[in-house]
Length: 325
Image 1 (cartoon, rainbow, N blue to C red):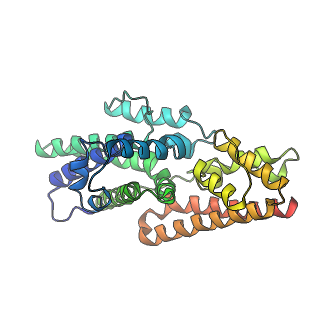
Image 2 (cartoon, helix red, strand yellow; image 1 turned 30 degrees about the vertical axis):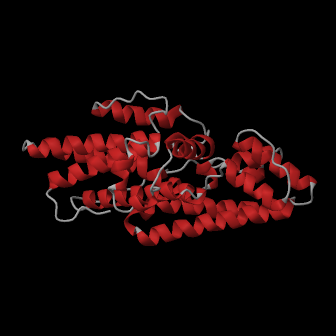
Image 3 (cartoon, rainbow, N blue to C red; image 1 turned 90 degrees about the vertical axis):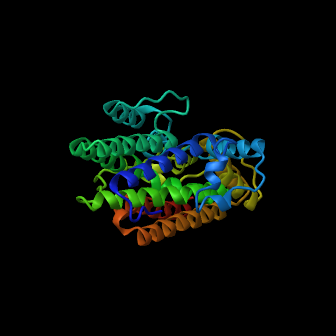
């Protein structure tokens, strides 16, 4: 998604409107008020059902973003793997510094709000350009760069891959377009100066899982459902599919408890090696997907490469677990 042959103000307006639409779609899904806008956007229109059932689209949105995949910066970057905390506070601070307010129970670090914040910053840039305020426009772009570098880009690649693996055509199209929009935006910032750079400590250091004598199935499950450690996002549905394929029960609970149940059942039913193999294959698929994204968007590889390294380490860790258990 590029903005060719546009004046700087027109490009900022195009980004503002697209970020705002995408933010609302992540937060609400393709509601009746948003469907006409979604149908008007190339790349998204084909993924919108001709006769969208509001109840069905609402249920799909709920299953994806409330039951399976939690599109929050804190979930993807905080080692606690929980909503809120330091990551959420960092996002809130960036909003506050720019005069942007969020009043929503989804949480400030929801991807929908982060995209809406970028729309807010693009609007500030556009207004400054139209008023001939070059310094204010430059300040708005600096804030865009800071937010992309310090907040959205560090977790956008795994979010997009996680959405793609859930199999909902509309949200796959939305995730792909979101990445294209951010990529084009980053490239436009790079035309002025260096592209946003990834920090050296993009991801928290994982615990030495197998070096601890007390490590058991609970600790292994906790590691695998923590995205910045495992390099991937294991949803409830993904865990359920593994159990179904191996014909072992996986029970109920949150993602960690469900995975603990699955690991215990696999051990009980002599399916543990097969489960570990399946998890290794999944890790390999994620690693390959990261590699493809870096080939497609080499300028943003520094934000993708650490995730690839983590998921490759997870594959090695699973090999050790399989050998020891």
